[in-house]
Image 1 (cartoon, rainbow, N blue to C red):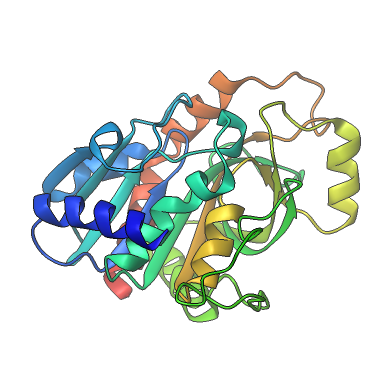
Image 2 (image 1 turned 90 degrees about the vertical axis):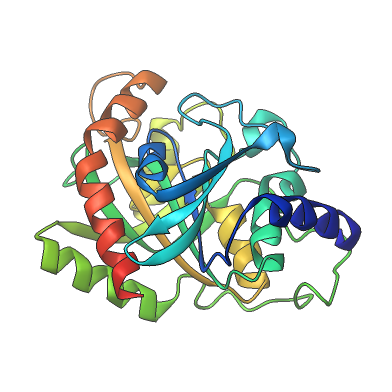
Length: 270
C-alpha cells in the first residue's frame, strides 16, 4: 500500500499546482459542481497509477483540482462502487491518496433512496450516522499502523463540528437540510420492500450503495468527514412504483442548484 501511494501521489503532484485543502467525492448525477471550480486541472482516472475506472452511469471518471469559495479542492468527479466488481481496497484507495496528499477534511456526497415518507425527490440529507449492510468492511485484512489503528473508534465518523457548519450554511441559504442515518447496501440491485421496512424500523432514513466504505477509511485515517445525501427517489415499497437508475440521475440533476449552493456555503465556512 505504501509503495502504491507513493507512486500515485508522485504522479498527481507532478500535474497539479498548489496544495489541496479539502477532498470532495461527487456521487451519481452530482458531478457538475466540479465543472464550476476556478482554474481547474483535470486528471482522468485511467491515467493515474493504481486507480480504478468509474463504470457507473453519471460518473465522469476524473480528478479535478480547483478553487471554490476560497478553498483549494481535490474532487472525485465520480467514485468507485463495490458492485462494479472492485475490491474494498480499490473502492477506498482514493481516500488513502487524499490523506497522503495532505488533505485532512473529506466531503462525501451521494444519491440515495428516501426511507422517510416525508422526503421528496431532490431533498438533501445531512448524514449523522450510518448502518453498514454491505456485508464487508474496507478495513478487513492486515493493518498498516502508519495508516491507522487496528480497531478504530467509529463513535463519531461524521464530524460534529462540520455537521454544525452544514446546518448554519443551510439556514443562511434558505435550504431545507434534513438529517438522518444512511444505510449502505452492496447493490447493484435496489433494496426489497422488506429490507426497507426492516431498516426504517432500525432507524434508517435513506438507502444507497456507496459512501460508507470511504467514510470508514477516512475515519481510520483520522480525517474529518462530512457527508450529504441527495434523496433522488423513494426507497422500494415507500411508493407503489418500480425504481430505475434513470430516475436517480434525473432527480440528482434537478437538485443540482441547491446542492451546489449548499456545498459552496459550507466550504466557505470551513
